[in-house]
Length: 205
Image (cartoon, rainbow, N blue to C red):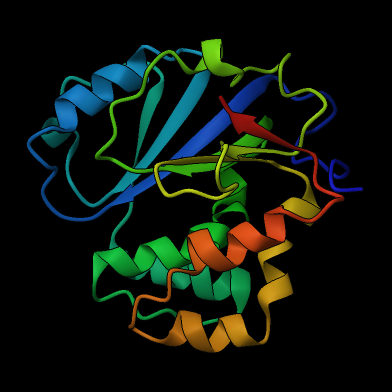
């Protein structure tokens, strides 16, 4: 079952952790994006960055900054996946999002769901669109209606099978993740896996 082996000690106490990784100076619109994150208090936004806290003010209470540089991330990725990444260009991080559930597993304990989002998105009140614990109690993933895995926002249950779902793309995925070239696996290849009939998927309205 895809919903088994959740990353919780007993009962999950928190709904979802949304992961964002950003290296370098925050974009000019970051304060607006952060404000819309703050308008979704049921979600915990984990922002891994090499920039100081002062670069991200004002920071809502549900946005947690975690210091991390690109070398540290590469070490975490290698330790979690056995694949040495080439992360010279920040856009290559998109290919690695499908493996974030394993790479960032220590930060996901206690959450029912994990996911990723883009920083150039202004988020509405997502709970009103079914992104809440009661609406997703019977589902394994949530993404856009047209395609299940999208860069702007995708949610997956923290069960071990779903955190390791990207392994279905192996061994081809290893070579493509090692390549510095953008492979678009996060959306296209991983999205096709999420269409598997055993995965209970709820599209965003």
